[in-house]
View 1: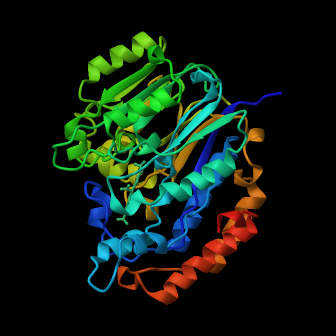
View 2 (view 1 turned 60 degrees about the vertical axis):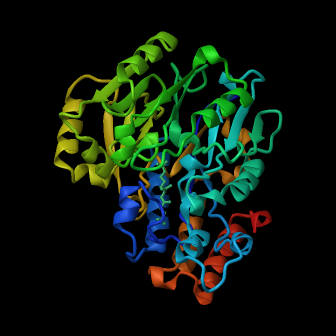
Length: 417
Ligand code: SUG
C-alpha cells in the first residue's frame, strides 16, 4: 500500500563548514565572516534537529556533504598564488548543507505524468554555490532512482538563476493531494542580488508538467531582499493549507493572497504585521525560516531556531499566536546556531519531498540507529574548529576528505566518493 508523506531531507553539515563571508545579501554570513567555525558541533546540531523531527513521528531523510575542496573547480578556474582567496574558499564551502537550495520538487499529484519531478538548482548567482549542482544531481539520481516514480532533471540554463525550493511553496489540503505551486522570484536592480530569476521558475513549472491553473508566479518584495531576505524562505513558509508570511514578503501581498484564495480555496494566510515584527527582526531571528510541519497528530507545528526565543518581538508574537485559535498549534525550538551564523535556519537545512519513503533509496533515509552512526563518525572525524586562515591548507584538506570518506563508508554510499 502506498504511504505518501512529506519526507524532509536534511543536509548533513560537511567537515569543511566555515565562515568565509561569501554571500553578499546574506547578513548573518557577512556579519560572521572570519569567525572560527565548529564543524563537528554544526553537524551534531543538524543531526539533533533530525532526531527532534523524527521523534514527532515524521519521515526523515538526508543528503551527504559534497566533495570538498572541489579541486576540479579550482582547476577550471586556473587558480594560482594570485587567485582571490574568496574563490579558494568557494571550493571549500560546505554550503550544500542547505538542501532547500538543492532542488525544486513537484510531487506526483501535481504533475502531468504522475511522477514526482525534481530539478537540481543551478545556484549560479553565488560563485561558491555555482559548482554544487553536478554533485547534488548525482545524489538525487541515486536517492530517487526509481524512474517509474521520479523524474530528476538537470539544472536550468545558467543564464537564469535558480535557487531551488527556497523560492517555492506549495499549498494543498493535504500533502498527497494536488497542490497549488507558488514560485517566488526577485527582480534585479536592488541593493543585493535577486537570486531567483522568474524565467528559471517558469522553465521548471513547464518541465515538471505543472498545470498552470494550479501554479502561481509571485514577485518577492524588493524591500525584503534589501533587508536580507536573499531567499523567499527567509520571510515566508507554507505547509498544507497554511501560508505563514511576513506582511512585507511579497511585492503585492493582497494580490498574492487573493490569487491563492482563488486557486486553493480553504487556504489560510497567517500574516505577521511589520508593526509586530519588523523585517529586520524577521531576518535576524529567522522566524519564517521555520519548519512548518504536520505530525501524525495533525496539530501543525512550527519548528523555529533558538534565535526566535531571544528576540522579544518575535517571541511575544509567537506566544500571542498560540493563545489565539489559529491553525499553527505548537512552536518548538531547535539549536542550529552554527548554520544560523551562515544564514541557514531550520528550513534551509531541509528539502521536502512528498513521496512514499519505500520508493526512495533506503540508504538516504534516517532512523535512530543511523543517526547514532552519523553522530559517531562526525564525533570521530569532523574537525572541531576551522578558522578562515586555515582554508587552503593541504593537511586540513586531507582531514576534510577523510572525514567525508568515512561517512560514505559507514552509510554504504561509497559510489559518491
Ligand atoms: O546561500 N549561506 C547560504 C545560506 C543558504 C540558506 N538557504 C535558504 N535560505 N534556503 C547562502 O547564502 C554562507 C557562505 C559563506 O559565507 O561561507 C552561505 O552560503
